[in-house]
Image (cartoon, rainbow, N blue to C red; front, side, top):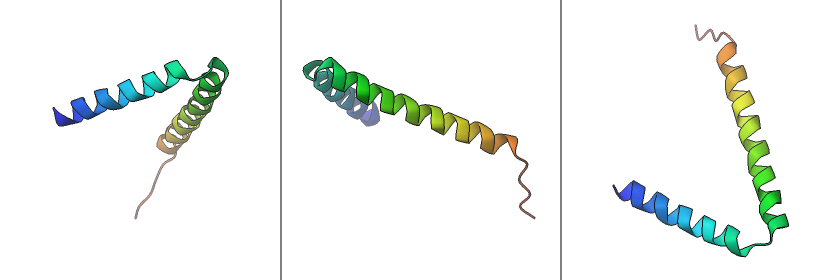
Length: 55
């Protein structure tokens, strides 16, 4: 429950910041986050496809 409260407070802070920032800055930050998420997804997918031999 405490985690949920902290997540909602953080979300409110971030959304409040985005509402006050100019649209160009908001879009630039959104693009950076999107690129990071795509890179993370590609890395995770590539890591799961390769066969790992630990022995």
